[in-house]
Length: 460
Image 1: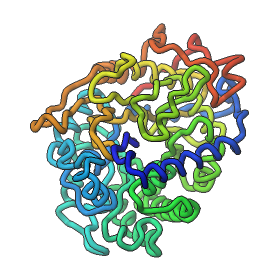
Image 2: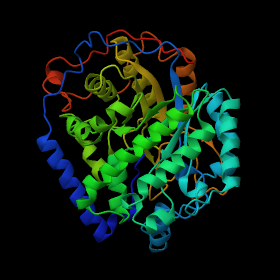
Image 3: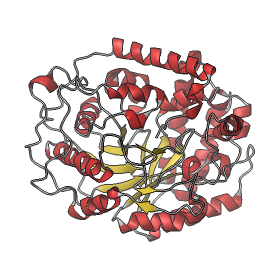
Image 4: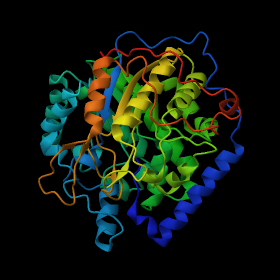
């Protein structure tokens, strides 16, 4: 997830943020405003596959592992933390050493899918040189996931790449695609099979935004950057399928409710032939009475009012855009800011309401196969530790023991998974926003009803 970056106060970063905001405004301006109605019946769309629903949690290496090696993001944090523009990463929540505790906590909730990233910078600290101990340690982590009855979902690149690649130009380096291809071959040969799910690149459009923030690319590099990501994704997809013909691979997209068709054109349509499922990261909606999503433009997600029913709209959009592809909510969560939210919304209520709308989507025929909560534990949100997404709270800056403290989301998620969702008769705690701009005018005239049927989502 893209957290609030304390470095956003720097003048250069402000200019970059304004350029990105301008780009998003242009995207909204040119994107068709009348999208298919989320309330429309999906017709002949297949139901979710019958092998069982993926109930998951998510993490990423740089954000949780600690003791991060040389990388694009390590260099940025090392340069900005001394001036107070960013929190130092330090040991993060020390997942690298405490993975057994975190994986056991996930399993205790009934989770059957565990998303993590394997850090390219840790595995290949110099070009063509691989750290055998790092690989063996990831073996132990992934084996622990499996031993607890969970399927790994492995992200190949979650915004972070090795320092030596940064020296050559990062993802714009002449050999970036080739270098990534070798890395993808290595990790898929090692960890593919037994149902492993794969994500090649996390949120490519947000990846570009982050690269602008840390000074690795200019706005004018946008097209070339996406060309590189597409080419690299194709190599990652091919590598996973060579290692496991039944592999399930995606490149998850961040849902931008006012520009979905435009962002589909930018990246989703380009890789539609080389994804086995559509990965969606849903965090916010936009409505006439909820315009707080503007805060996401500068990564202040804690100021965005949750709109759980918008997950139905996101699912409907991608199901209509890519018919026949199963859909997986790869990330969804709600941040707090160093404690409770100002609006009083509890994580448990947010989770139940979100899953309610997910069940409504499946009941209406949309082929959703999984849901990951972001995140299992609080983590380093790309510049600071104040944005809290964890089912387990960890006070990194004030608690040297890094104690995992369960939030209301832990019991809620355990009950949800055990019941295959919320029970019949449940009604959302949070009122639906009025007149979602993502599906206007249909959302004003005939919004999706909370009175519709629910489908039980039995786990794997």
